[in-house]
Image (cartoon, rainbow, N blue to C red):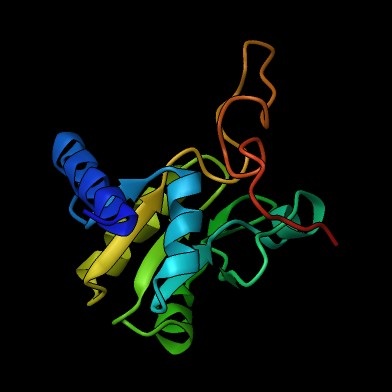
Length: 150
């Protein structure tokens, strides 16, 4: 079995175990491998403009705010922006800070015609450590995957 098939199988198994209404859940390094290997893969970063500007972004990701800073008000145009920027036939990999907002977006995308949707577990910054800080317990950056900062 190919590496991509193993990743997708693991992602589907996680979805079953977690009771997810979308295709699956991938770890950041798995998402990166899928981005490199699947021509239809799109990494969708749903964090806020402030997070993109001050924390960093993944090169070549599509960026659409799910919630806006400050106050984290929902983006009323999110679904329209998504359908305008991302083909529903894409393999959609959804990324946020820690995996919570991306789960919400994955559910919405799957309910609106996106057939291959994966939540990126751990997100860009990962979970908080014992001191309450991010970027040391999991996440895209902590795993050493490509990212940039403005």
